[in-house]
Amino acid sequence: MIKIKPLSPSLREKKRYLVYEITSKEKITKNQATTILKSAIKRYIGELGLAKAGIIYLDYKNNKGILRMNNKEVNNVKAALSLIDNMIFKTIYTTGLLNKARKKLEVEKCKQCNIK
Image (cartoon, helix red, strand yellow):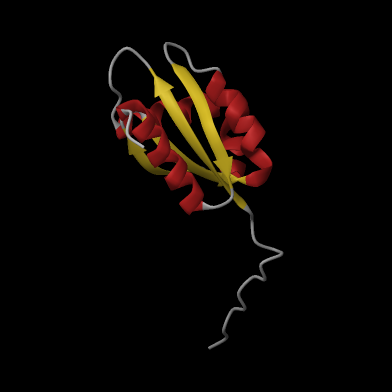
């Protein structure tokens, strides 16, 4: 049986984490948010662009969440998400580290509660 060599770090796809907030009249569930975001991205950059971006929906709570995507497609995804109808999509923070993204998400939640 032949063992497959793992990819070296320089050949792997680099990823970025996007912390976002959706502003709308009603509260949106995680399933609704994923379908809305996926359809908006597909409408703007198409299925091939959606596949290249490799979007994974990580955390979502209180109309805020984290997306993981390919670093080369961040600007296309941001542009696609800014074109969503009936709600406002706001990018809070973009980073290469998941822990930083989660901390930024927690800080944003605390700002609404006026807790530091």
